[in-house]
Image (tube, rainbow over all chains, first blue to last red; front, side, top):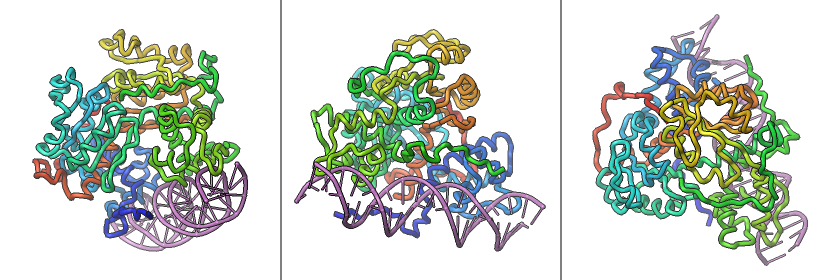
Length: 245
Length: 245
DNA sequence: ATCTGTGAAGCCGTTCACAGCG
DNA sequence: CGCTGTGAACGGCTTCACAGAT
């Protein structure tokens, strides 16, 4: 027991706090936007406003990367863009495979934010013969049977799982066995993975449920306009788990 | 200055910690899954495993809702499902409008997880005349010009923004002006909203960037298979902000 | 004078370990 | 005895406030 978390973040790791890492992409986006508007220099106050955080937090975050600002002046936009990009590993290309080409998989395949930020989609895979062979966003959907081969051949390092809930764990096991250690999961299930594999999860219905919680606290009921249907017997709520990603 | 955060979470709020709220939907899903398998009673240890958290955390989370377990036994699945559903406000129906019917909007419109959990999609809106009038998942796409009317007529309380980045803030301002206080934002921008409005953000490229950071820390480079292109001149990274959600 | 970088304090969330109920 | 519910300890993140660089 006592599963000593092997988390390699003791020190010497140049340890950037997780919370900071999660905000760096936001800063990066704000900086790109400034760059497009021709801004050369920015203060922590301005950048923080653009990123939606407070300026002390921004400064502390950036201080974990190094001293890239000039006191009395601010930060040079281009330089900071480079430093953050490098820290996040975006100066290299990452090869991504999308498994599951339903509605969501299609949306992801066509998502411009991937290609433009150092992520290259190198495969669209599906198990459905009716979908395999289709042309989606300039790529041909391939059979998921070839998953292991494709990962090895194309050097896939990030797998995006957009399958139905029932298929997700199986797909995950296969990509992990094939050597992938980073998974972005859109299926509404908790994936089990061995230590050393990172899973991030995006769950649309969870986000909505969190909003509903706060909304309920504000008004005490939906809408406030007029009461519409719903509100049936408490115990009788029908949950269908009809998720299809 | 000193923008005193008007965060209405001082007390009397029956204060459930935000971190707990974010996990309740996960517990709920695990419980539904148990329910389908006919399990009537579950221990904190079992439920925690199914939800991917540790059992002490689970017990503390549930303790914020009340004492719904039985010592020496565990939790009654059905009862706990009801209590969590009620706490999250899922015993009522929430009316959702999706603005922006591109690839992602389509995926969201067809997402089973909405309808099955107390969320009713009551409108698909787009600005593009070529899309307006189309039938998507059994609904006709309507013109975003009618946004305010639809919100009022149908009692929309949650707006899902799936527009391109450039349109998002404008749409957000309009839904907020029309009385909506909960927004789920898929556009890659930081939305400004007045106090009292909740915004949650889902950002695909941010998640990938966080994965890339950790992946970089493991291997020191993408793939580990062989080095492919990339790695160009540092200052020359091309960022296109070509996001179209 | 201005704005960054940072110790110190405070807050929040997690984990431990056990008291207490069934 | 088994398992929940919870005070207490701990650790991480945020915020404050100011020292220090330009």
